[in-house]
Amino acid sequence: GENVEQHPSTLSVQEGDSAVIKCTYSDSASNYFPWYKQELGKGPQLIIDIRSNVGEKKDQRIAVTLNKTAKHFSLHITETQPEDSAVYFCAPNGGTSYGKLTFGQGTILTVHP
Amino acid sequence: DAGITQSPRHKVTETGTPVTLRCHQTENHRYMYWYRQDPGHGLRLIHYSYGVKDTDKGEVSDGYSVSRSKTEDFLLTLESATSSQTSVYFCAIKDSRSNQPQHFGDGTRLSIL
Image (cartoon, rainbow over all chains, first blue to last red):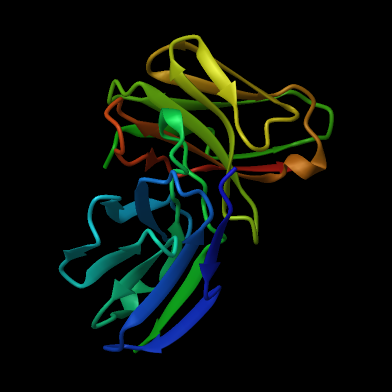
């Protein structure tokens, strides 16, 4: 099965700084790479995703970059704000059928005002 | 937000009792999933469904069963609850197109004493 490692496990930044979270996966058949944000007491919410035929995708302050050769993809958040504080998960699909995802262990991001 | 309702939202029960959690969707999506979330483990897939009466095991299925008798409802049953099944349980849904995101409910917090 897919092995997923996410780093760092915790990340503390000052408001306005950038934050980068990296996800490494093992299954070369993976072709879908989402990032989820989870706030306290809520379910994970998709914030950005990328498919294997694209190297980078941006949505306002959030971007995802994919390196299929090295089998890793990263979440980039620029101009961080306190409301970005949450737990972030990567969840590549391992090329599986039925849309199954394998989640990383999560990164706790804290943005200090 | 995706139309997903989990019930109950909180439950406390005793070891050895049966427990059923319900996931209800209003999106008419084909795929439904049950995950559990524990500290340090991210989200782990318990069971999933790819259609009415079509279900299969995930990564951590021991001690759990599921049923899907209609498109909108996916039930997770703990036949005889154990303390190791104390967790937060999330339901997710996905439509049938490939590489589309899963959307999550807000979870059920289950405590087994």
